[in-house]
Amino acid sequence: MHIAEIEPCLGDQGEAPMPSECANFTGEVGDIHAYRAYARTVVQDSSARVSPLLVALHNMVTASVSPEYLIGGDRHFFCVDQVLRALPGAFVDDLPPFGVSEGPAALGTGLPGLDPNHRLVKC
Image (cartoon, rainbow, N blue to C red):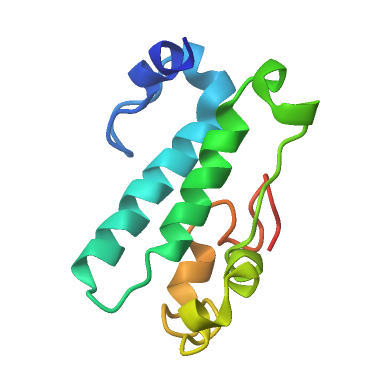
């Protein structure tokens, strides 16, 4: 199972160096640490939207699924703005574009679907 392989690599960021068997998971481990950090900021800010967290989580899970289990064999990654535009207007008309209310730090989170320079999806 994938989680059994990656779990030893998920210690606190900045702790002792990752074991050598974690070399194949450095991107994924970085995403998990970035997700945890961004989630903490969202929890602390009652005005923050949860949509970016859900988009990032979708992209992270999608990246971890073995191709044999993907419908059509393709991964479908999304950008938060793309998802918000696809929602009915009643849910998003009163929201500013992503990154405006969250501030520039949200765009550099290191999360797929939020960070414009992420390795999985460039938004």
